[in-house]
Every structure is written in C-alpha cells, then in structure tokens.
Image 1 (cartoon, one colour):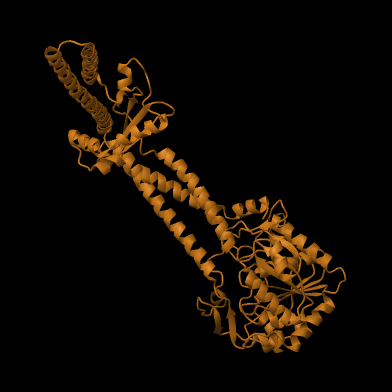
Image 2 (image 1 turned 30 degrees about the vertical axis):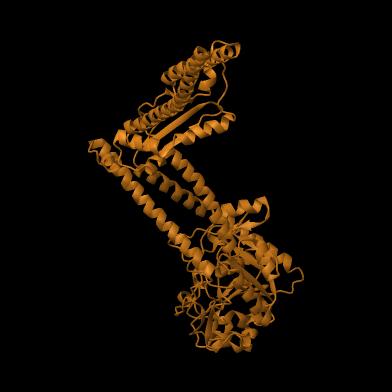
Length: 602
C-alpha cells in the first residue's frame, strides 16, 4: 500500500477513528472528574560528601568513591522500614509501611547531592507532613548512625588510652626499682607521647560526636499545596484523545483487513476480468421519493454526469456495434442495479438512441416507479401469450425514443419463462427496432432468474455497491455467468467517490449489518446462517438448483465487525449520557452550594 492508500483507508473509516477518540477521551475526562483530589508535598535533603574523620585532620575527602552510587545508596536508606514506621507512628497514619511507600517518591535531583522526597495524599496538610517527617527521620537516623560509629571509635581510643596509661605506670615502677637507664627513659618517652596522642584523639572524637550533623540536612521543607496535582481533566483528556486516535487508527486498519467488501475499482476489475465503465456516487434520496431517475429530475448533479460518462464509456466498448442487448444485474439486492439500468436507458434515449427497457424482475419490480408507467400488463403477460409485445410496450414521454416493458404479474415459473425460447424471440424482436435493449434482471445470487435470461443478452453490465458487495459474491456471480456463456463487458461501482490517486474508496462506512437479507427482499424466510431455502423457482438451464434460492452465508468477520460497531456505539451513547448527567449535577451543585460533589470525593 502506498501513502495515498493509507489516507484513503483513514477517510473511509473516519467514523471508526472518531468514535474511538471520543469514547476514550470522554472516558478519561469522566474518570478524572470522579477521582478524588490528590495533593503533593516535596521536601529536599542535601546529602553531605565529607568524611568526619578526615575533617578532624584538616583534610576534606569525599566519602563517596562513586558519587552517583553513593547518592542512590542514601535514596535507598530513606526507604528503610524503621523510618517509615516512625513516620506512621508520629503522624498517626492508618496504613502499613508498604502502603506509605506507594504514596512516596524519593529521587535524586539531576547531577546534584540533593534528594527530593515527594509525598501524595488526599489532604494537602498530610502530604506536607509526610514529606517533612520522613526527611526529619532520615536526618535524625543518619545523625545517630554516624554518632554511634564515632562513639565506637572513641571507646576504642579510650581503651587504648588506659593501656598506654598502664604502660607508663609500669615503666615508672621499673625505673624506681632498677634505676634510670637510657633504654627505660626512651620507652617511657614513647609511652608518654602515645598517651598524649591518644588523649588528644579521644577529645577530638568526643567533640565530633557532639557536633556530628549526619549524612543529610533538610534544605527545603515541604509546604502545604494550594492546588491538587491530580486529577488533571485537561491533561488526561488530551492524553485520552491521543490514545483514542491511535486506537482508532488501529481499529480502522483492522476493519480494512477483515472487511471483504469491494472498496476500489481495481478490486472489481480484478475479480470480474472486465473494466469498470462507470463510478456512480451515492445519492441522497428524499423521503417522498421511491426511486429517482436522476438524469431527468436532477440533470445537473454529479450523479447525472456520472451516468453520462457511463453512457459514453458504453459506446466506446461497443465500437464494433456487436452489442445490442445489454443485461444489467448485480450479485445481491439493494446494490443500485435497477437505478443504474433505468438511468442508463434514459441517458441513451436522450443521446438520440432508440432504447427498449425490459424489466425481468417479477419479484420486486421497480420500473413503474422510475418511468411513471403502469405495471398491470408486462413481460409476464407477453411470455404467457395473453397479450402481444406491441400492446405491452409503453412509451415514456420527454425522454426521447424510449419504450418500456414492465415485468407485469409474478408468474408461477419465472425462471423457466425467462429461459424459454419465447424470451429469446422477444429480445430479438426488440433488437430489430431499438439500438439498445436494456434488460433489468434480479440479482444473480438471489434467484436463478438472472442467469436464466443472461444467455439471451449480447453483454452483461455488472453493478456492485462499494462497501456492501462482498468480493466473494462478485466471484460467485462471475462463475454463474461463465457457466451460461454470458459475456461480461464491464462493471459499474455504485456509491464510490474517486480519490486523487486514481484508486476509489468507499466513504460511507456502512454495510456491515443487514446485507444478505434476500428473504426480506423477496418476502420469504431465510436463516441467518445461509444456504438454500424453498420458495424460488430455479431454472435447470441456468445451473441453479430447482425450487431453491441461494443465500450466501454471513462471514464470521462481518458478524464480528457488526458486533464491534454496535458495542462502540452503545459505549459512546452510555458515556455521553454519563457525561451529561455529571455535568448537570456538577453545575447545579456549584450553583446552590450543596457540596454533593465535594462530599462524594472525600
């Protein structure tokens, strides 16, 4: 797929994308409005790099051989259980240390020795108290930890000092007993120096123990926040919109992958092996219109121009003038077949051609709606021999030389009559007078009538509806026409809009549900799973099964897509109702000052 194809898919499935974006956005906003407010309090602690022992000697060394590792060690020490327990006990919090830790974030600030302690709570005061108390507990704990280490060193120096004192006393007694000598004097001098040095070191350690500040110092205590940090409806709404758009795009391309309906002229040409002669845009039919003869009632519209293009394309294909009778059919009902046939007949007549329009659809005739003629007498009467062809033909005024043969009454054996020799003779007789004989037949997959009459036509014009006609249905129709030796000269795709890149995509987005409703079309019963049902009259010559109507089954993918569409529509409607109710309650509560919303959020 090229870029234009991706853009075409997005245009075709825009409502799926819009629905997904709206659903996720509304859900995010509603969830934000229903969430209780959350406040933050942040305290900053400066971690010391000095070594206490080195400082006493007048030297400054970092006690962190690896500064980043040392800072992360302090961050982990702030999360030890004793500190959390002391914080809970001092503030009287009703939670476990694990629960408290979930509401606290401790992290280093960039490339500095500062650690941030951020606490969250539904109350601004509580959030600030937790951050400050935890910071104070760490400072106190680190101070006690360092003093304990210094105290242990002082005790060791004091023990050595007593040993040095005892050594001096022993040397003094020995000198008194043996007399003074150079060796004893040297030993006594060394012992006195050691004692003096240890005494000075002990004094320094005692002083350092009292002055030890610990590993950290609170440089910025947490203050009570005025505004909550959560929820943020605007931010969450924007994020929801972004997530919804991504989800919608994914759903759109998933739909495109699973959807087996035709969406481009190239697909129709590939399956039928015939060119697409016309692309008819979908028209909006007014409520009081049953059928529309666009070329007569709306000659200036895009659809009317499309029918003129179809007429010209047909003349180009018929450059050898070997096609005089043209059968127009489709795979399934409601695909625009009769509309295309009636407008094509009117267009040819307006171009100065002699046209005979024959309606072979006995089960659901529509000719009298398009041309305002009577359907009391028609083709069924001519085939039955009750009336002559000349008396059954009706002339249409203001359209040119156009004769119409309606279907007439529903005979008991329509397929047999349409496949009979007499039907061939009727077509040949009309060809002797007319330049074009347009034959409108029932859908090929609905009943056998269409394939029965196809043998008497010089060419077949196949009509499909974009976004509705399944590719498998077109393929089955082509096989039926091939079995009876029919010649497909071209196709018409109804309901397509041409894109700039040459491919055409369907933009309606409908057609997933209620597509293969042949029983509704012919007023007969058919199960949802497809198959053959009684009620039709198959013609053995056409290759269809006698007395049965073939109904293609609805594929699992189409059922899945229909279900997803209904679910998304239902969820969207539910969220819209919830959003409206929530907005009304919120504004009424704010107007009257009832405090309902605030009470619910506590």
